[in-house]
Length: 599
Image 1 (cartoon, rainbow, N blue to C red):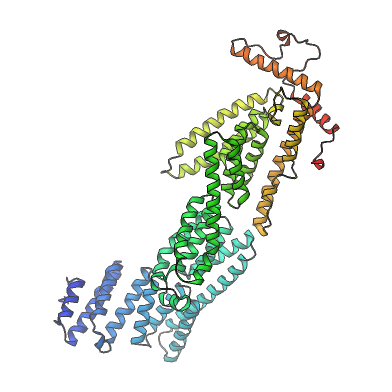
Image 2: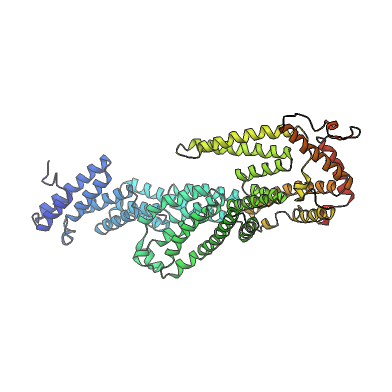
């Protein structure tokens, strides 16, 4: 039957009740019941916001002085609004409605069951278990529909499952191994399928993701859950337990999320973004609450570290642009020495310092820093490309080719990722870089076939005009600096579990690259420290230079055509005979006893 409330909006109905136009009990009953039915219809149609409005109007239609007179329609409005608010994700408000309905009729098991489910969704398992147990006892006592008892039994089992998963996950995370963290993540995912709004479970899951280095997923989890968490934060509980003012009542909801998000950005190498989040945390910490302040002290310490790192990197970049390469090296070194826990950021500092060393002509130092950068961030394309260039400069074309193949693999992977992100502006740039890398590889492989000897002077950072004493000093300095036993000392870590294992693997890679570089330095000294071999090497370098000049002038004469340079053909070694220098150089090196242990 049509009602005279049909077509009225909320403000019109409220106005009617304020004016007393419907003061009779029949009218109040009719209003509440009709609004409830309209709410039911909207709920069934999927219009939850409209349904909530109708239930609210129904509740407001009953004066507080007469709530007991028309208990049933009012009770159902509270109960139905609770169901609607649960569907809208506003669990805390739904729980409040359940409490109101239960106060009107303590025997209404349906609303008590709904309250239990609200507690369970919020992760308040003790309260949930009490409600479920109460429903089971009441259901058995008054012999109502057995479905209530069954549902309560299932709810109790779910609550116990959440407790079990949560406790086991917390224990596993303390083991600090990836296997344990992976198992913990599985347990937490199961628990969250039951208690999806549990702050404790969400925080533990974020910690598990961070331990597994799934930083982007952890950030996404924290950001996506924050909005609903703020809506469901228990203001009353916070006030009782933490003595937080109403305006700051949900600071703890933000606190752990921002703290973990800042750590994620730090480990991703996005220090500026991490600092922005930490500055928000600092504002939260300005409230007069010791508990909250204590929780953010670590984050504030991280903020100070980040500022120092960014200042040193910024100073290094500015000096590099001004051509003050020595000063740039000093600033990058300060940043590296301060903190290397953010591996991508440390890799960038090593890569930048390599560029400064290259500009200073310290090629061995530049190669070592590129190797450190690549060990810290295996997908750091710039460092891989620079090391390939440095290997080309010292004519180590074999390893330059290895680097370029690695570069191509990294660029292809990045190109595929960009292809999956249609809005990525770097797609065309990545394709261009990939094409250039392929072209460089073809050129380097062609050079490798010629078997040219290394550029020994460049490796030691010396010049052909330097004296034998200069060569010796340069060698001792390089050998001391790049001894494999010293390589990666800055990276030595004390972490246990998988984190410690990860650093150990990084150090092994650094040691392997340092061993290659050290042998290259020894090979250069073995040739340049022997006057006869140095003279022969210098002559071939001169012939190679003349050959290049001749080729530029249009004469395509090979450097091995020695008759054009006045050199006897008898006993002449082609400059392409790289194996000769390496074989004899190593013999000479061993003769002088320059072993690892000496340095």
